Image (cartoon, rainbow, N blue to C red; front, side, top):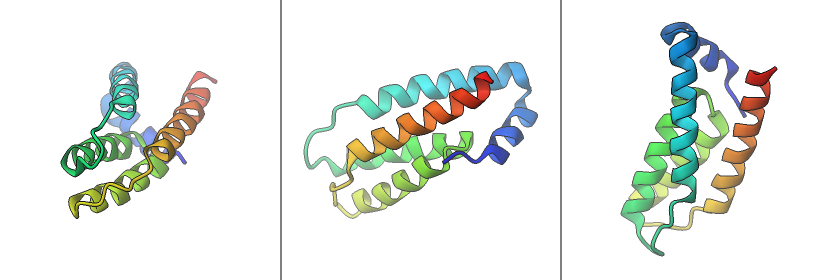
Length: 105
């Protein structure tokens, strides 16, 4: 679910203070993005949203979320809007909970 090696790598790259800011920004933006309403059949907006989430998730080590978003992004690029956003939201919520629980401990 979480690539803790990537998390440690990012923290080492940017330092503890900047890491906290990156985490806060990611969570804020991902919270907003996962709740953003999309018009039914709007493949372009879905592709853009999933691309954003995928990149952000990869950067912060949310590997399961990134994989789901990558699959959905590829489908949307082909005009297929069948990606289950409920599943994306659930995986994001579970990843966020696991991530914040470990950071808080």
